[in-house]
Length: 268
Image 1 (cartoon, one colour):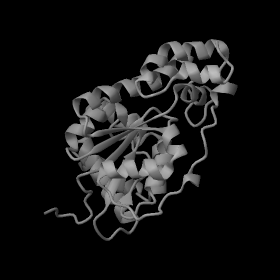
Image 2 (tube, one colour):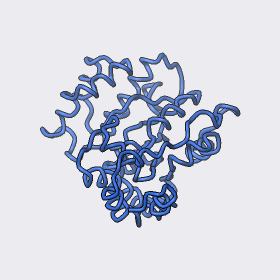
Image 3 (cartoon, rainbow, N blue to C red):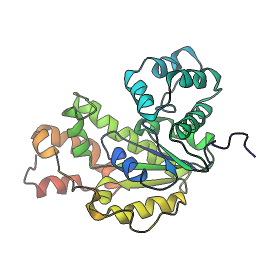
């Protein structure tokens, strides 16, 4: 029996993948589920440095965005400082933070929880090891639109074309490798499928997580259709580079990016 009645349960969801792929929408939809808590992005498990080593601490203490996330979550800086100084591992820090978030939300009983930090894909192997009951939801999106969003600086700015492509390729490659090793613990969720059928895809996600939800929680109107931002953001040369570098990997997840370009009448 846990001493802390608000300690997180042992079957969390981690929303991971490339940035600008729909993790925020998925997180917002999950927040509707009764008894499921999901704080702002934490980034506790994305960093490669071993926890409590000198290089591992500045991202937690000096990042203004993460400080703002804690403010939104209602976790005071003194509480976070205490967690940071007493946690022995990244997993302990994650669990302690979720419990502090539960208290800030006035939770009075058991709850499910999720973490939405797309870059945690880089720590996904550690997540599977440290949280034996955890499930990973890998959210992916047509690479043309992901790359376009980053080049335009939509939330995350990556002005270098190959840098933006690497963001997408690395996340998808890591997720694919981990699924081969732990197929029952990773779910691939395409953004395009989610926005076209919110009720169906959320039922699939929550079924994967073993969470029951009341009927009628979601509607098809809960998301707008994909805009295909790449049409206005990528020139023919950039489109050709995305097709060459991302096309084969995208095809494994049902994307025919070349056909997408042809249908738009923008064959490079």
